[in-house]
Each structure stands twice: as structure tokens, then as C-alpha cells.
Length: 395
Image (cartoon, helix red, strand yellow):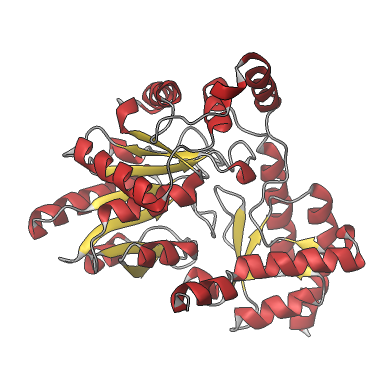
């Protein structure tokens, strides 16, 4: 016998992965250039050259038994000190290396954080649309996912709706900005309003409520200046970060958890993080890529490529008659389905070799997610297919 729940999860992969696998098979059948695959958030631009240089330097200068050996369970202290220094200098966060835990990407950061903070039946408030694996991670940790719709069309936080959802069972409010799947970015005003609300609710309910910020797209922002750093606004904050998107390294699975030093009982929270990492087997994140990080802090891949893809698609699709809100960050946009059933819309798009992900798995209906972290050729060559698809609806 096996776990029925795990069996079902394994047999039915996420809709994103299902469509990505369909795309791989279709490309093998008719050729890569004939399939317009916008399914998977897999960066198409290379990592900065400094990443390669740093890896080569480490391999050539570090004894193999050191380079490939275990770090401490929470990660190499020198690496954690470099990250703490970077966060302090960049965001004024007064970061502490002893409160940073190295992980196998943001997914591991989230799983560890949920396991560390949740007791059975505790609720996690998740603004929707949301990345569908959140629900899987929360439920595996014994929590309950409570979805709260964002504002219509803008996909900004609905503070009043979040306030109505917070109750004596709430343990975590989870946010993701820049957002997957919409590309929405939460402003400083929104973050401050959310922080003020949570502080008020903590006092009213006499209950610890954590703000968990999932930030793999932190650097992928098309506006001016830097985005607000959540721990500067709410003391009981935890950040889940990954270098997968900023450095185009999704397959290397390297990231970290940052517990705010302003968090009450921060040392206890971090001890729970360490215990959760131990219980899940998420200890000693990949050593080579841990040791690469100090040499590339502050660098990003050339996100101007994503910006141009975004501008081409927003302009062309809007002119064709598609409804969408231009995304401010990440490399996704949400397109309003021309028919009520987004699943049917995405199936019709497949006939034009356009691969989109219907919004149902993201917690809302009537939209499709388009991941524009693809090649420029895919973007340009897809436009006649998008037009033909819209023409069908206009007829």
C-alpha cells in the first residue's frame, strides 16, 4: 500500500507541468519553432557571465573534499554572512547571518516555513490568483488554505477582504510580489496597509500571525527604484527567496529563508526552521552553488529581454482585442479568456500551437497565464497565431 494522497499527487501533476510536457512532445513532433510555448516559467536568458566565472574559480581553487563536502545543516556560515551583509546594505534590514537558512530554492523555503510555523488546522491566508503548489505545501504541513480574492483586474491586495478572513485560526498571511501568475507588484502603500492590519489583528486576537513573503521574482520589476522589503514593515516576517529567476538558475535549486531579527523570539522561530528542515530532509543545500553566491550577490540576468517581450505582447495582444492588465514585474501576464471557460480557451489556443495555462488552478476562473520568459522569436512568431485565435472569437 502507498499513501493515497501522495499517489494522487504523483499521478496528477500540476496543470502547468502537464502543458509543459505536452509542449515537449509537440515540439519533438513538429519542431520547436512551430510551437509557441508560454506554459512554464523557465528563464530563457543566460545567467550572468560572472556565474560561470565564479563556478570555474571555485572548482579550480578549492580542494574537492571541501568544495563538494557537507556544509552545516543551515548552510555555510560565510555564505550566510555575505547574504546578511547584502540584505543589510541593500534594504537596511539589519540582517543576521544566524537567522538565514540555505535551501533548495523557494519551494523548499516555503515547505520548511510552513512546517516550522503551522499546527494542525492553522490557517494560511493566500491572496488569489496564486501559485497552485502553495496549497500542496500548506496542506502537507497540516495547514488549511484560505484564499482571498485580489482586486478585480488590477490583482492588487484587497486589504478589507484580508481583514475579514483573519480569525483566531490564522497563523500566516502569504504574499508573492512580483506575483506569479499575474505579474502584479504590491506597492509600499499596500505592504504598509497589510502590516498595519496584521499588527492590529495580532492585538485583537492575542495570537502570533506571521507574514511570509515568497520572493523569487524580487529583481524582476519594470518600475523605478526598489520594491519594499517586507521585514522593514512588519516585525513577524519571514522571507523565502530563490536565485532561480534572478540569475536564470532554476535547475540548480538554491535559495534561503530569512527570519527578520525584529521578529519576536526570532531565535526560537529559526530553531523551528532548522527543526523543520531536519524533519523534511532539507539540510545542507547544494554546496557548490552555496559557495558561488558571495561572488554574484546583486547581479541579475539581463531582464531587459523580458521587458521587451512584455512590451511587444502587451501592445500586440491589446490591439488584437485581448483584455489584460500590463504586468509590472515577474515574467507572466494574465489574459482574460474570450469565453467563460478558460480551459476551453486554452484548448482552442492549442489548435494554433499556442500553449497557455488556464487560470482555474491559480484559484480564479476566466483567465489564462502567459509566461513570456521565452525567446524573442517565439514571441514574434506567435503573433499571427494569436490573431487567428482572436479572429475565431470575433466571428
